[in-house]
Length: 251
View 1 (cartoon, one colour):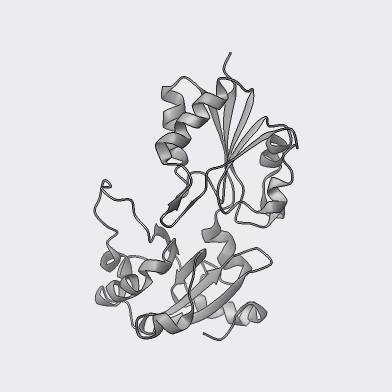
View 2 (spheres, rainbow, N blue to C red; view 1 turned 135 degrees about the vertical axis):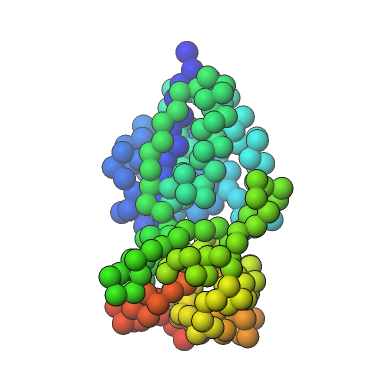
């Protein structure tokens, strides 16, 4: 009989933020297929006899195409009882978990989703930025800054989002950040709208800068921005340097 695949969210990096359910599954898995941003302390939970397969994706560097990952999970489930697909953050928040679950279901493989804490909530929280706040933000939108080619929709409508939400949390947006800032201003967001860029959120290497949309455009090359990072745009960003000043460095 085929085994079962568990799509497990590893959380944003801090091993203490992984769910008890996810940790238990890792401790008893026979195979783990893991992503680039899964931290080493979390991988250390995997039994030494379990098979470990790296399937990370970074910009322009994919260890395995998505179709091959799905087929790999199907093949492993047909020969092992417990297969964990370990993803940074949450499997269903910009994690391609929906694509993998559909492929598994279509192949007749039993599959279960174990949610994880997504970086779009955790990284701002560790940086002292509440994504909602009664005085600053009654709405928050999570959006990817890096879209698939030939997707169902050609691009995120940044101009519409400029006035459609008070806090914008951007995943994978560093390489397109100047365009995002320009389009947001063109859509009606003030040029001095605060922006926080949080690198390696919740990990020992975490750091953050506060800037604004205009500076993103004018000083992008000087700001020394690099992934992995979460970008937060909106008035609530101003709370970060007040609540977690030790995390912020000068831009």
